[in-house]
Image 1 (cartoon, helix red, strand yellow):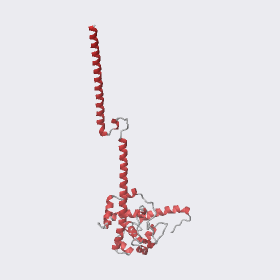
Image 2 (image 1 turned 30 degrees about the horizontal axis):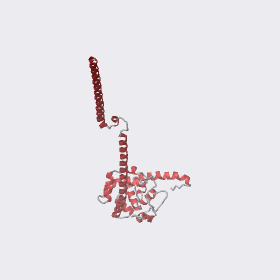
Image 3 (image 1 turned 180 degrees about the vertical axis):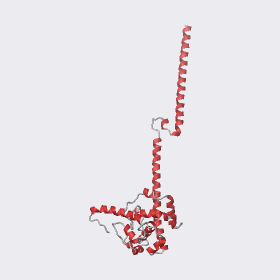
Length: 269
């Protein structure tokens, strides 16, 4: 069944319908549609705005980065879903996932070490979450779909794509190298943003703790310094009291001497 919008006003519902169809298709490729051929499956996952050739011959012709032979543009086998932000993509992967991807891309580990990441990567790639961050050839898209969504083996891919195992693994390694760079860049960006937010919050805290001009130092002092501020205030009050007592004593002595001097003067007369 082929559905086509009659005019531009009715095209919006068709786009939403196709997005929902593609979302369900991504999930069903691991179940009832597991035996679907790579050419037909990729054709169903394509954006409705472009229909490049997706048969087995086209996949084989574009087995390296020469996907343009099949009329595939930059997004190639990717759908037109909403591109995710760095923050949302970072929630899908941990620092350990990034290290595993990097180890495999550098040929330091076997491909089984990243096989558990393929369903998440494949699902979000074909739903458009990665956006233009990653660009795959038709053959790489077929490998990602078969391993990540249909959960096929390398031997199954060898029969369906009619490619030798070593060539499939080489394409798979190139593909995972691209995802490794993207995941690492996303995680680094999120960490840098968190550090900037922490620095801003620290500066605001320091500014709010700074004592205002003419304010009581005891109220503006940090929690660890309130005791010392209170002790200094008490010492100042005690010194003021002592000065007041001293002044009162001096005044009394002066008055007493005046009286004695006057009394002596009166007796002499």
